[in-house]
Length: 386
Image (cartoon, rainbow, N blue to C red; front, side, top):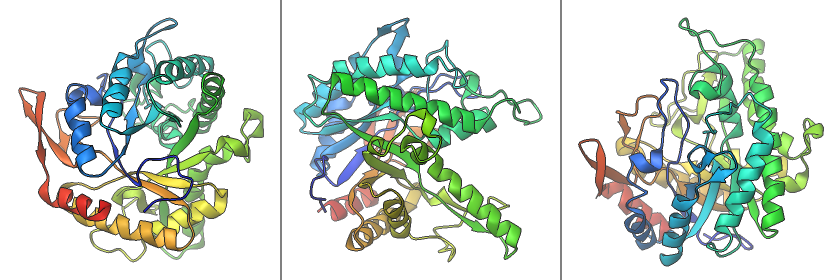
């Protein structure tokens, strides 16, 4: 499958986990290092290429890269760029994957100009190493990050402080965090364009479905209201909401949508609509994609999707079928990114690993030393990629 005019080298893509925030327990995360991806770059990319994938998503990591005031170390990203070029892969770069430099928080307006300076430096570092068009995601999942930073302690010292009783800090507004992150994304885009006028932008947000748990009018209204929150970041970027932030329709270049089995639930219980049990209230992915296309009129990709355990292959086949259905209905879907390529540690409990990758990470003494193939999932990938 290939969409005419797509800037992407392949429809099927692979994504590497790159979260780099400090979690609620004060542990500084570096998923690229934890999975050994920084040491196995060449082998990881060669394995992706052999499967027929020609496009990967990677994270530069603001927290990991800004090593001092107006000082950045892009060596890891440069090594990724060089290895990808040797293997004939295109990299879609995420600049901020949740983490911020230690002297900033997500509640600080100083984040906006600081991020713009970082974005410009990242573009300068990558411009000579990456064939065009270079594609950037300024800030990954603004909606999710705003919620996590304001309503939980998941973002550690960068977000709200949640007390022992689990009560969130009422002074922290998730909407204000979202506004600030949109401002930062827009400022980052402007800074990148100054360096690289040919740059393209992929804004990535979760796409969800919320069902009422009963037939009551209030419950139905609650489900609609919660589902509507998913549009706020895109609407702000497009200038449809809070136009004073500086957004405009041209800011929505490409739209990326993240969707997992847990992305659909009922209210008020928040019980997930079980995919593996065929809950009839689930909305087909093709319909979710169609709704986004009708709302924004912008080309899109599924920027993250995957499953865990033995359900990985069946989930992939379902997604492939829904992608074809969406395209047949006229949705300009240009790609699907399998995420993650490698098993990853849990963000909250890094000693616990999720069996979600195309390859398992072989570890010895807590260090990644190799990869092990997941046969059924790999065969399914080969089947859909063709």
